[in-house]
Image (cartoon, rainbow, N blue to C red; front, side, top):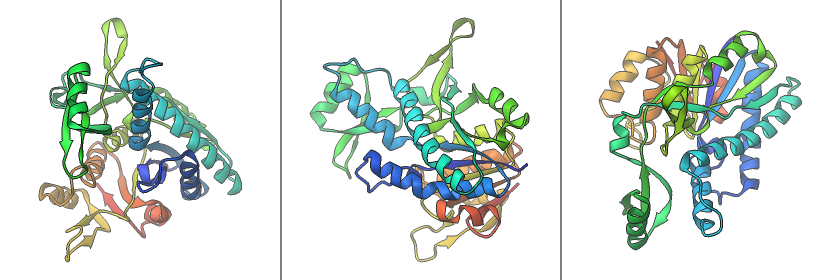
Length: 317
């Protein structure tokens, strides 16, 4: 059975222009779920991972506002909260869509820890903005009180907290999930794993693990998870129908079928924006270099046709 890992971008769960309410998230996931159910209906084994940027930002803000009454937990606990929250949402709506398509499956979210290296250079140079915006005065107060790194976002008129974004090394629950899939569990179950890139942890003494305040890039984690589970296909779902060269210019060209070598040349030429398409292309290349057979970058409406080779950016090794 073809094993496919689909990495859902945040827009598949909560569009950027929405107010961020739970009812909006339900409606958006309800629109996303039929395309995922169609993957299962096509006789494929489906594993899901997802982003968590807006959701974990909201959790951090809630904790900050309530800190006078309830002590705020570390950021990695907020990562775990968002995995449970979004996993529940996906399970609710995808289970229903699978039932309607007459291909019922148990949708099983797994709270997932991702090992990172304590020596990763990212810990010395935090670059990932998280949470809300602050005035210069509040930013300075938080820098002194909490030891946060802060950076001004002049375009959006405020300061934001910066946290490290280390590379994922190993998904701790991956071996157990692969054993389950190889035993045939995937024919009756859809696992939802490594949400938001996974909960970042570093090794401690005597086999223990310690959570760290960081944000792991969800696309790089998706590539690692796909390789650990021996998926044949990595499909990265975003808010555009594929990757493009000359994006936003008069000579913009969407990439359809392409090769790893060609895509790598575009990446080196600076064709893909940092914080947007660049990490997705990087994840695709990581997956293919690690032994994956093919990768797809597309949006939810085009997912089925992209997997069939008729839409999206389709990359072979």
